[in-house]
Amino acid sequence: MGLRAKHKADRTERIIHAAAQMFRTLGFDAVRMEAIAALAGVSAGTVYNYFPTKGDLLVAIVSREVEEVLAAGEATVTDPPPDVVGALSQLVHGYYDHSLHYLSKDMWRTAMAMTIQSPEKPSSRNYVALDGRLQGQVVALIAALQARGHIRAALDPIAVGAMLFHNLDALFRMFVTTDQTLEALRAEVDRHHRAMAALMAV
Image 1 (tube, rainbow, N blue to C red):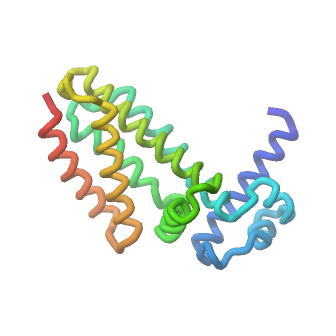
Image 2: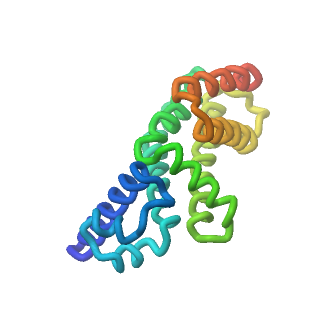
């Protein structure tokens, strides 16, 4: 990486870190881009150049979150536990356990609402694309379990993976819109996984 690219990466990191800190502390709506710039030690113009809107910045934080859980999830996909429930829970717990590392529940709600209210915006399309990548990893896990003979061969891994992802996503939306604890969320998704495994497992 050249010096210019290093400087850009450093500025981007500082901006994202400052935005995440301020969004969590003050709330998304209360934070101004100029304040993020000041905390990051860059000019407001630099922030707007990298992230034209606060929505773009919020999705950049979501993207950081998703990239990290996808990277961690690859180990489960590559070498899944033979127990279907154990494999699903290992992957999904990784998603859930990391979900509040960068974002608060309020930030998740804002990002979700943004994609519904303004689906045509680039930041909203980027958010939907991130969901697609997570769904793809769930599908990959189902295919891996099927290839090892742990799931019935007749099942369509793409359809099954999509159903499992939409279920875990719905449970996560309930989590961020209520006072449900992370432990309760994990227990609920495990209950669903046990029911699905009973239908899928060989």
